[in-house]
Image (tube, rainbow, N blue to C red; front, side):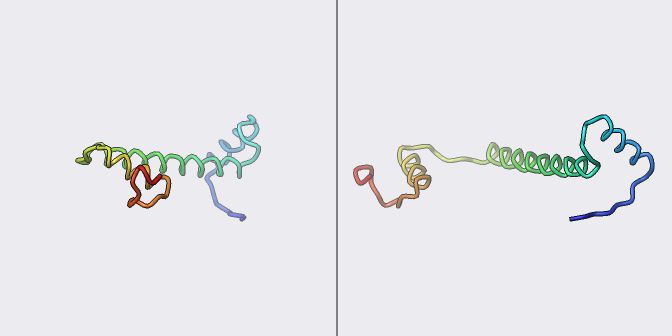
Amino acid sequence: MIINIDIPDKVRVYLETEVMAGAYSSIGEYFLDLVQQDQKRKAQAKLEALLLEGINSEGQDVTPEYWQNLRSTVLGESSQETPSDA
């Protein structure tokens, strides 16, 4: 995809300096890196929000049944199976 954008001269000079310094092979690569950094930042923020939600939740008791249900869910087994069926 080709995207055309107008940028101020100061920004253009900065971008050209970054490319000439070898930080990037092209201005397009610079913008692609910015987008990737933004995606990582948003994913990190989402992860942090989910972790805080988990920390602030009431939680549940961890019992042998909890572990069995978790194991069954992860392994894709029916929760109706007993340990002797596995």
